[in-house]
Image (cartoon, rainbow, N blue to C red):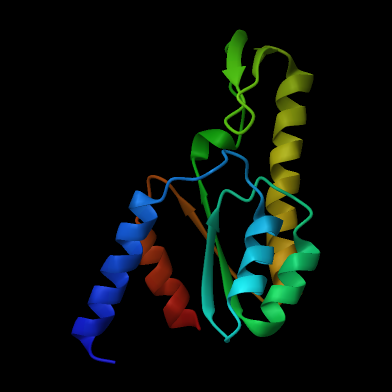
Length: 155
């Protein structure tokens, strides 16, 4: 494949990602993997981009990774890692739209949030590792290009 053809394919993928309009705001990694397994019959190189704040996708990843070369690209914001102590805050769940008043001044609330967040990250890393799939972690303020180049060089 020539460089020009590769460039056109990459630009097409980027355009489709930018123009994509999701049907739901909910993260469902298992559903995405089921869709992949049911529609892509030939072996493919797959990049699954998500925040991976989902669970129960180990079985579907196991099935999909037997056929495809899958890399999970976790995109996150550093501000998601810890909840700041700023008192009572109205928060909206990005997936359900539910609005709730949260007391960020409560140490147990902050620790509970951090524990939940770390459990999701651990699940992501361990699940992809068990299934023989690669992982890339990139913050929204970092160059994903540098991260991806480093990942491809290591493979």
